[in-house]
Image 1: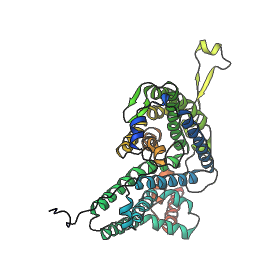
Image 2: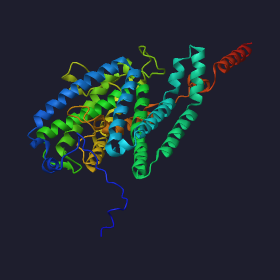
Image 3: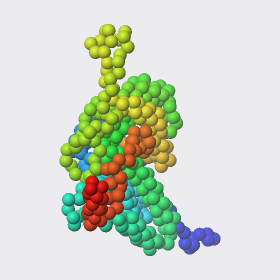
Image 4: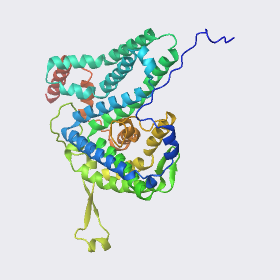
Length: 417
């Protein structure tokens, strides 16, 4: 007699196959083919090139529009990345029985967005509304209580999660809860540093992002034509020829491209508010040229005796080195992650490239390094009077600021007498 016929069992659910999943037979036959031996490589190259041109044109337009639009672009990319990662572990059968559970993921996502950007851009927001007394007071109060608001929004999501738990789905729901929090850490860690870099000056966003793109393109083409020696098992189409060739090309490009970008004031000035007006500032010393005399043998055969070099170009070499040697490991990590889940790409939003997460894997590592490098080796802490007043005024309301100015004026008048 079969004792299992009438006993209740937890049903087994099959995970749906996505468009980016690798069929087993294709994975076995093509998984280890080098790019140089791929018979479809020219077709893939043209699709990839066409998509790259569209992305380059779109990003160039957004960069021209300014800091606020670049921030908006980062937010849109975040939403696409979160959507791709949320869908990675979703199961159609469970989701039909938990219709509101997906909304909970987005509740945590937008709560994290409010917390992160509220902390990063608080001073820029205050500087934007200083001319309007009502808005200034409203924004000041929102910033003051922003952490409390975000905390209770998170607690509301936590309570919502507990109340939504259903028998037989506990493991799936807790797995989704943990997965959501890991996504928030991955997505918002890199984006927070990216936005901080943007408002330090567009240069600190566009330059490292360009280095990653150059390295990626270089690795693709060197591997395309010369790749014979596999680099790492996690990503079988990566080769030592592509890795080394791209590293050399990226270092050369870093030094020259930094000089080109460093000449544009629009790219080098920091943005201290959220307006879209044209920026003008006294260039930072690292963007002011220094003239290096050429050696005698070279100067005799050339029409000039010295060459201009921006100090930022020496910093660019370190950024180029990191983009060439360390940042690709973000891509290797993503490759291993995709192999663990047996998918080819995180999504299919960008033809020839996969999803947005596939394009941002190395950018995540690079953005954090650029912020740390900039704060450690580029920013000079001068503690000027303007800086000290700014630190004091950001914690005062409009009436307190007026009282402080009146007191300072009274003190100065007494000293003159």
